[in-house]
Structure formats: structure tokens, C-alpha cells
Image 1 (cartoon, protein in one colour):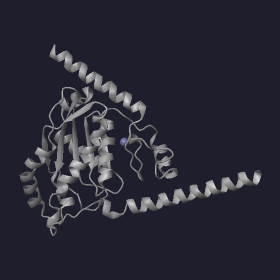
Image 2 (cartoon, helix red, strand yellow):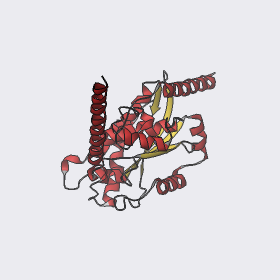
Image 3 (tube, protein in one colour):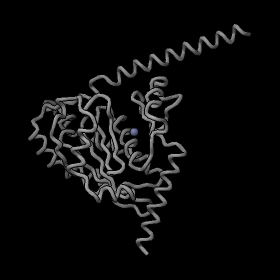
Length: 278
Ligand SMILES: [Zn+2]
């Protein structure tokens, strides 16, 4: 009997080791430079012009109207012209619209909350040119981007709207380093998604950062989050939650607790709208 238990233990330990190392292999593959590396072979000025010309049609694709059966949250979109430069290879005519397709796919991350009765109204698409190191220096951190955005785009009314959860800003930028997929500033009411070559990452990062704007937090402290990623590279054992995004595997689900928070926001938004109408 003891022998059998020992053998089962060995098999389990070995399969866990295999699981652990296959996760490391996955990490190696997932963070391969191609996920974060853009084309950037179009002239900046040229790219800016063509994005500004095309944003009208992109706006048509993205725009959504208020839905009075749901709780509407207004989302202002800011797309940086460098996103086009990231995706669009100057020498490849077939990928000219890739940037807009990737943006649409990233916005699918909002569906997670639409299912819970929230509705994101995208009424304006802005083109930005944050114009700095993108594609040149991949060692920036979020504070550099944060200070630029806060200075140029955030004002008092944004802070007010963020507190009522009525209106947020979402910035779509190309990656600045090989670790950071996005960040959110719930008080200022804005989030950043660093667009990668992985559609799945873009989608789940959008869901994750919007979650932060709605007041959701990581269910585990950061250290644990990192540790859980190391112990559970495929997020099978610990992390399946959209707010528990690992660096190795992206998740795309709301826990029951998080659904409760979203529901409370929904009820509050609907209540306030009704108060205004009476
Ligand atoms: Zn987070």
C-alpha cells in the first residue's frame, strides 16, 4: 500500500514538474520578440496623416450608441498613430488595415462586462501622437507614459466621472517593453493597453484594465500573483480570473465576487439615470 502511494506521489510530482517546465517553454515562446516587436518602417509623418484620414472609417466600425436597457458607460478612445506603424509593414500591401482589425479585436475585451449588463458607449475616437521613444527604446516603464497622459489629457472632470464610473478614457499604444501589457489609473479614470502581436493578450488586457477602472483589484497581492504564475504557468490551478492576469497565460473570466461588484455598478448607474429623468 505504502509503495503504491509513493509511486502515485512520484508520478504526480513528475507530471507537475513537466507541467512547470512546459510552462517555462510556453513563457519562452510567448515572450519571443515577435509578440512585442513592431514593423515601424513607415515614415512617422506619413503614418500620422494616413491614420488621421482613416480614423473616420475606423470610428464608424467602433462607434456604439447608448442602450437604455443597460447601464451605459462612456468610453473615450485614444489611438496612437504609432499603433499603425507597429502593425503596418510598409512593404506589405496586405496588412494595411491590420491595425484597425487589432483594435476591434482588443475591444472585444469589453464583452465580459457587456454580459453583466454594462454597456460601453464609444462616441468618439481620438488620434494621439504621444511621439517619443516608441519602437526605439523598449525599456520605458509605465510612469513615463503616465506622466505624459496625465499632463496632456486628464483634467478635473475626468476625475469626477471616474468616481461616478460614468466615463473613462482608454489609450491604445504600442508596447514600451517586453513585460508590461497595460496599466490603469482608476482615480484619473483612464487605462492604457499596450497592443502586442497577440490578439488574445490585447483582448484580455483590455478586459483586465477596464476591470481596474471599475474598481476591481487583483484577488491576490502582487507578490503572490507573480508566484502563482511561476507555480502555475498555465493558470490551471490558481489563476483563472481576468483580474489575476499572469505574465505567462492570460485569463478571461469574472469571479462571482467580481460579478457582484459589476452588478452594483450597473444598479448604481441605472438608479442615477432614473433620478435624472424624474
Ligand atoms: Zn492589474
